[in-house]
Length: 380
Image 1: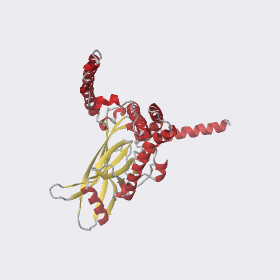
Image 2: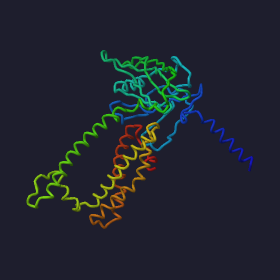
Image 3: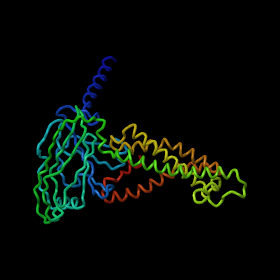
Image 4: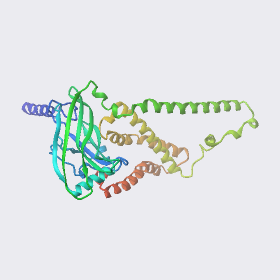
């Protein structure tokens, strides 16, 4: 038994050391591999139209590591991470290193031309940090189409952690209209820069902090002031009319939403659907509040697709809110078929979402988009 315990302890220590420095712990040693994952490519004008990166005839390089979906959110968002084949090592500079050299056939040239003309861009991940780049550019004067064949990475690091990533593209080659083969050399450069920026603030540049700090609070303040002034005036008038007789009340001033007091206790025609909508609305409102607070506290934006995964988890928890609110509303208005109320409330939002998802997913499958969700993932 003692030997067996020592064996498992030793195995655990070896495993811990082997995974101690990687993109999951965000800590690297000098010369350690930094994997560059490529995600999707698609037109910038429609960010929902995405395709697998290697549907374009890029160099695949030497693939060592593979990526599997780590969360349900990654699978639902259609994230197809693949190893770019670019060899990058921590704190090791590279200057114009070759990824591969290949002859672009007429088919390859047409694919690249279509992507450049339609303003295609791609997404990469380095240590969970997203970066974007364009496939190429179109000369505004001559109309010539150019393909970027060089990528230059500027990596900012603090101690043993990667803080920022910058990507620039260059070395364009002209893509001709005719069917000639074009020789292309795909290359990259890496420059490591020491920085004093903290690792905890590395996502600040990707967030629109000015919007949240100023615009939202200003808009909320203006709306609150307007509502308070309106309600204060109405309450003052109501208090004044309580001292008057019935014939002296100003009944003609109530209009629009102010007349709702006459309908709050009147049962609606479709009580079952109304109760389900009220319950679902309360659930989605609480879900939104919980996700916002949890994102702020837990920094969900720092990990890929974790917001969607957390949303699914918290949706199941907040179903209690929908059930209680819907049942209480149904009971207050005299509802008797409580089993139907439970079934309609539980299936209204998921059913509507499923129908829309199936339609969109069918279109995505038809166009071979990476947004297409596998049937097994959808059932799960």
